[in-house]
Length: 134
Image (cartoon, rainbow, N blue to C red; front, side):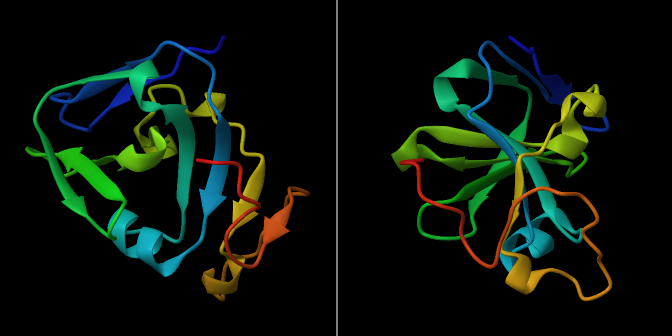
């Protein structure tokens, strides 16, 4: 099992995991771009019950079912959570050791930034990836 730990830039928010991730992916949708403030959202998907988070979190719903969380103090983006599916996506940029991030695909590449060239050999999906129940 790989233990993922991380938090925000001001160190007020911390998280750690107790299980292996469901997947590690890169989303290029416009919603993620706006929420993260970057060209894509690289995230580690976990079951909610396998992640403990401490510190001051502010949340908002970017869609009917997707809640996003950031540090209430510094604003660092920490997660996206879909409670109905029981999953939470931890932002790869908030990991203490970003070398642990090992993506398995890119999705919503139909919305990727035009200047961004995806140079790896990972699978790419124009929109949502194949559904696996989460």
